Length: 322
Image 1: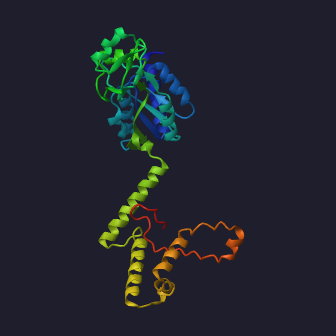
Image 2: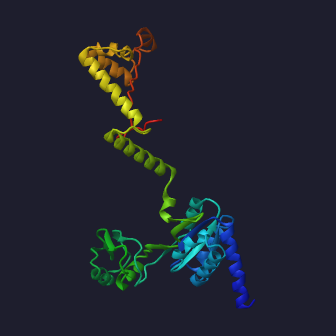
Image 3: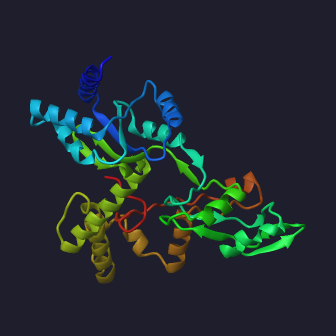
């Protein structure tokens, strides 16, 4: 097929994909080989479609869609089309696609002149190298000793820091030790969904993380409302609880009683010893005596009294239920 016809067919197919799919993952493709791409495509078959192409062609396709409809939300993708990137189209679960992509990373050796993606740490122990190769270790200030005719690393050493260039000596040493510290694969950069663009970190947020952040924000809202004296649905249970505690304290100090105090009068008239026993009973009470079931049946069971005046969960406890 002539080149022009292939381009026209590619343009038609990609434009249709923008219309059919509402979710797109923008991924970096540095250091990803053709075989690895084939494995990723096979793993995503039926769940997503991996699209690679020249950035000029992708910009042309997006601009054509914008010309047809200036309000088309795909225009938000234009700033992202730069560098060695690719698109993954899906209508399914983005978290599942992310898991498949991360599972298809492959280990790689350190090459001189590349940037270290992570810290490279050389563990202590025997290296299998003969004493004649100590020059490699001495040049890199690796603490070693000779044990049973081979070089042994004495202590753990951080050989390369993340973001630093890998030097020829470091690369050769890691090759001798058979250490492949890096792994390469598609790197998630951005998420596009129904016109909105997010950072790829949003896919790391689980239900538990979102629930914890919601409770944290709710607690802060409650604290702010109480400090400002402005009642809200979040702060109202705590403010009512604080008001009840204040009324009980005033009534106990002045000897005044009101209708709602009737169930509290018995607690106000108790001695410190009786209150201590009541607190122990509320917390679960003491373990049954070793006399068996008969002794337990003869002993009258103390009534457990639970007192809840509200205010729980405001500063780190269990979240209040509304």
